Every structure is written in structure tokens, then in C-alpha cells.
Image (cartoon, one colour):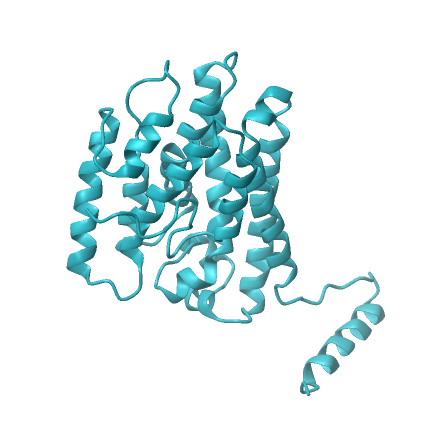
Length: 288
């Protein structure tokens, strides 16, 4: 297997914004930093199968190799330098292996350009990603007095909420690559065409749905962050918190840039008619 094609901390080719991950490693404390660097590097290696122009046969050979490497990692060994670095960075009292197979599951899903029929499938996708990324990071960087089950639960909730927000951030480039990041039943209920995910600007029905999804995903992630109140935990997980805060900021900016829609502001029919006329008038004026 060739050496890593992307520096540790780089985002996958079809994945989230690299700046958030770079800052996550920059601000991480010493115990967490090597974990994040190795995890980001492994994720980038696995997600390289989604690189545009890569032959399908080559992608499957890479997937097969990394599937075997993930099995080795689960047993406590590895061949790739990033896997070996990750295992070397784990605490001395931690179990010998690390389960990275959630990255293989999500990469396989994306390679097949599978769609989410309902929200439970999207949530399951995010949970599998979290099991390989944020769960080991939280468990291994947790303060000594934090129970292992509490660290596992926090890593799962944080990663699931963070990954769903990242899916919204990469919505359009993923759609251009043939991957839909919203459940089909939600698109249908909103009267939005899945093909509109690749359009810019997006149609009003889709913009309305996206604003609501950003709002809900932001609230979910903020709720997880607000639950980290212990000062020792906030220090231990600082890199992860920075990562999440940057994702929240990017989400807010993206949601604010969505096409605006007219909302009635008066209860009277005359007031509604006046606002509607102004809206229609502005829409009818061609831009310069």
C-alpha cells in the first residue's frame, strides 16, 4: 500500500472543509493531537476511493486493502504507518484495538452512491462514522476520572451530530458527484426535486427545507457541546470542540446565504397584499 496521499489532518476528497480539521489539530491538547492527526489521515486514505477519475477497479482494490487493515486495527495491529501511529498514541490502559470499520461502511455507501430513504438511514450513517472517528478520540483523550461508558456515549453523540452538520455543508459538491445528503422522504415531503441539490441558487422549496435542517442540526450539536461542562473535559476535548464550533459557524453562514423567501408580516389582508406586491415587483425587475 502506498504512503499516505494527503497530509495528516486533510479532509477526504469528497468530505468536509479541511480548515475545520486543521484547526482541530492545531488547538488540540497534546494527548488528543496525535489521535486526530492519525484519524484524519486514515479517513483521507479511505475516502480517497471517492476521488473523481479514479478507476472503479482501483477503488475496489484500495477498499479491500483498507478493509483488511481495519480488521487488523480492531485486533490491535496494523501495517499502514497511520494505523501504527494511532495505536501507538492510545493510552497504556486502553484496550489493544481500535474499531475503524465505520469509515469503511460509510465509504462503501458513498462509493455506491447510495441514497438515504429516511432519516434513520442518515442517522445510522453518521453513527457509523462517529464510531470510528470521535468515539476513539473521546475515549482515549478523556480525563482519568471519566467513565469509559460516558466517554463512549459522548463521542457517539458528538460525532453523529457533527457529521450530520458536515453532510449539510458538503451538500452541493456531493450532489454534483451523485451523492444525496438528505433523505428522499424529506425531499418529497417538501416538494423538492433531488436534482435541485446540485443547483445554485437552490429553488425556494429546497431552501426552506435546508434552513430548517441547518437549524435542527445546529441545535443538536450545540446541545452536545453545552453538556460538556466539566473543565477537565473541556480542556481534554478542546480540539473536538473547536472542530464542532467551526462547523456551526460554517453552517450559520451557509444557511444565511440561502435564497430568502417572502414571509407575511401583517395579519391584515391589505398588509399581506402590499408585501406580496412588493415581493412580486422586485422579482420582476431583472438584475443589472
